[in-house]
Image (cartoon, rainbow, N blue to C red; front, side):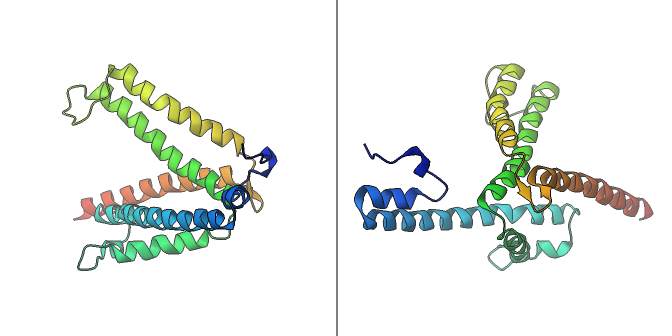
Length: 196
C-alpha cells in the first residue's frame, strides 16, 4: 500500500501523493494531465454555457447583443460576458465555488427531474426518442438519487461563507433574482406585444 495517512488527502493533494509514491516525475505528470483535462473541460463548458445567453436573447429575455456570432457561428459576445462573470469568481475559494455550483446547477438539474415527472403525468403519449421505464414511478425514481445527493451536499456545505453572507444565501438570492427578472421581462414583452 501507499502508507499515506488519511489526513494527507486534501484538495490539491493528488500531485503531492503521486510524487511520494513514484517520484517527482509522476507528480508532474498528474499536474500536466490535470491541466490538459481541465482545458478540455473548460473549452466544452464554455461552448455549451455560452449558448444559454444566446438562447435567452433569441427568445427576448436578454439583450439582443448576446446573439452576435462570428462567421463560424461562435457566439463571441456571449462568451465574453460569461468570461467576465467567471473572472469575477476567481477570488472565491474552491469550496465556495463548489457550493455555488451545487446550488445553482443542482437546482436546474432538480427542475429537469420535476419536468420529467410532470411531462410523464401530463403528456403520457408524447413521442420520446428515449423513455425511462416504469411510468411515473420510474421517472420519480430516476431523480431521487441525484436529488438526495445534491441535498446532502447542500446540508454539508451550508455554512460556507462569502464575506458576511453564506454561499447558500447568495445562491438562493441569485435564483430568486432570476425568477423575478423572468417575470419582469415577460411582463414587459407582453406589454410591448399588446401595444403593437
